[in-house]
Image (cartoon, rainbow, N blue to C red):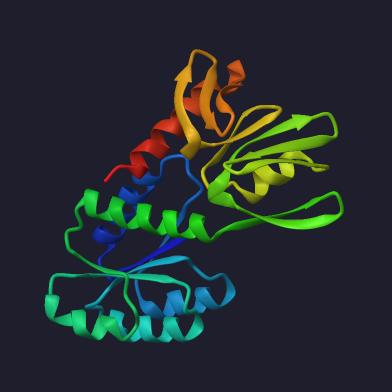
Length: 236
């Protein structure tokens, strides 16, 4: 997920970036900051963002004008305005703003926004696989874990299993920003589906009952950090 913070106050830009970095932990979230809207517009054309935090009161280009220009480029971005003036809310509806956050931003409010966007993005995300010559779309939020089986991968979902001829690394790359983690050379798990850590395993719920998936000793520390970061980012 790519996030941009646009504010003419350097101190606030850095505070917001540090706060988002802290909330996201080891999740795949990139945060860039901009001092004015023109710079953000220029970069957006080449490499769009998913979430925008825009200060309303900026001298070069105010946040409302910037949001209108960005909305012309994409109707999929999430726009959050940063302001201390509620009267701007009416104008925000014109650009379908997700939310208004008052400055200085409270960490719990920022966490709510990021968690909401992540959940929305994940619920819409689908993964295309080819099984027995047939192309199938899987909802990412329904995937529990992947298990390497020689030259095949077994995909366990909330509605069943799929055996496909893929490389587990391909799925790791595709799902890096969706809360999946490589616990072991042969396993890729959804952090959202982990019930708890059990020594050197993670306990997962499947339609067939609880399953223990191994965690390699070299990955144990990073798996714990990823889990804690995921739980932290999920908390409201």
